Image 1 (tube, rainbow, N blue to C red):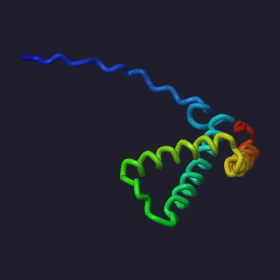
Image 2 (cartoon, one colour):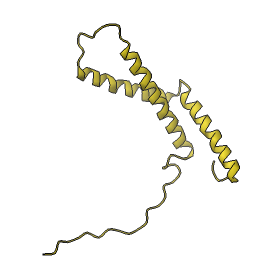
Image 3 (tube, rainbow, N blue to C red):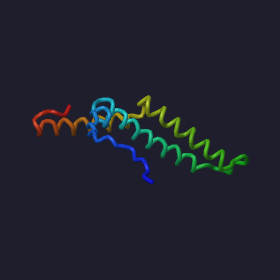
Image 4 (cartoon, helix red, strand yellow):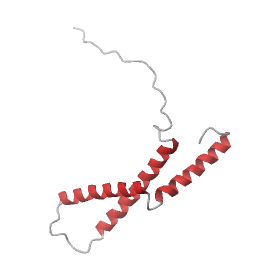
Length: 109
């Protein structure tokens, strides 16, 4: 008995566009904001660990929800760009991209 086989398309995969691959203005901005969010999450986690007393109503479920709320808060704060971390990261990488474009004769913006 022969089992049916499915045919697989042999079409080549197209290269991702610069915006989809993290390039372009939006990709660099989002990456910088994501980096700022990671830093803010770590800051908030350190602040939570420095508690002065035991939480009488604390449980692992409460801790999990608190971590999720802190992550959401960090993402929101990073999106507002009030701390300046994302701006510094973006400025630094834009300078490196400009240097790369100058050396290669253009092409990278």
